Image 1 (cartoon, rainbow, N blue to C red):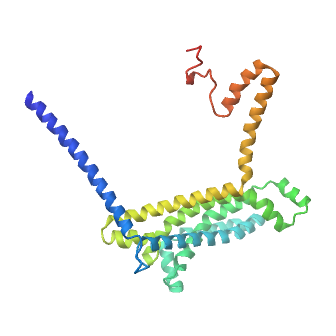
Image 2 (cartoon, rainbow, N blue to C red):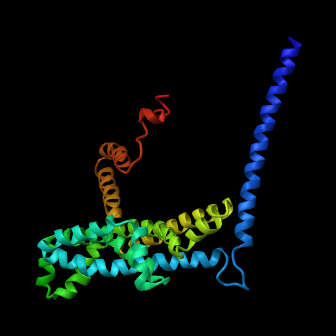
Image 3 (cartoon, rainbow, N blue to C red):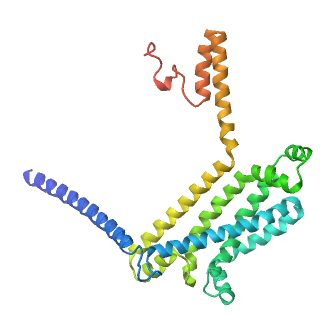
Length: 300
């Protein structure tokens, strides 16, 4: 019995030791990756080496592709919304382009653009159209007809009506597509590393997989994901700034419910006491006598 107890204690200690060793190994791996990222962040003597130049290149390729795609999708979507028979063939052509593998399109661009940024920017901008074009068309089509007629009655011309009436209404749908296109483009830029571009993809492929070294791979993946999150957050903030009425519209029903509850309480205390829990429930809360909260003090 004593021998079995000692063996059990020994096994437990060994398991705890192995768990501690695994945690220590994981921590050493994280420290090694961070040390590599900090140590290779930039090289003043060689501006083309380091993590910072790759991150800058990744941002340049991504944002330039997104802006060009948006600049093409806006007038093309406007034309498709105005002339409805134009939309099906244009959308079919965009989908066909999206079906072409990105690697093949990169290599097809090489004889014409060489090893310049346009080798990656042109295909990536074309790929954004499959997301941006339907969102632009849907956003413009969701503008109510009576809103357009009211703008015409107020003397708005076609251009002024587009800029001050139709586009503000379409902004949430357009930015929703822009968010998806931005994240997709930021991730696809890494594929351009196969033709000597790619930004952070060059860390992943050239300095990571080819050298069997995991630190550049982890740094490239983490920075790519962080760049996508930051870009998405900036677009969400831009939408809130461009559509301030959406925040006010959400606040109006809450103020109206409070006003109704206050008027009911002033008119009849019994009705007011019954209306308060209903207003709290409508606002997303629970009434004081809700069984889920344990009831009132008297019921407990």
